[in-house]
Image (cartoon, rainbow, N blue to C red; front, top):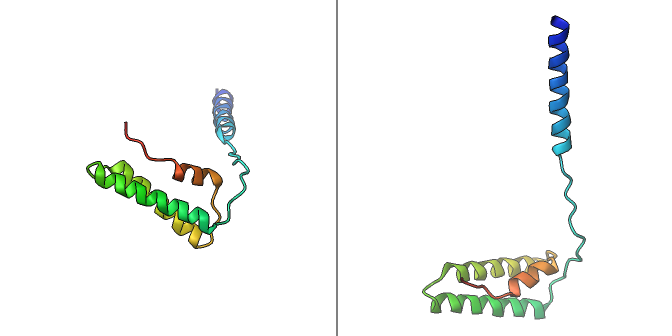
Length: 100
């Protein structure tokens, strides 16, 4: 009886570890080329930020527009500090905020 119990406990432990190991996923990031900041890109982002802030004022201080302006400002600061930025982030930043 002890052998059966030991065998069942061992099988349960092996199964648990097998499922845990198979649940581990490896995330592969897409290989986008990071963009070096340029003055023209920063100027576009500053303009988009100002537009988002204007829309926030015109739309009863809608938080969606304020959030968009904040995100753009953070992106500008990252670029000015010399960090590389993913082109997808630039595209997202330059897309106007929408309120449904």
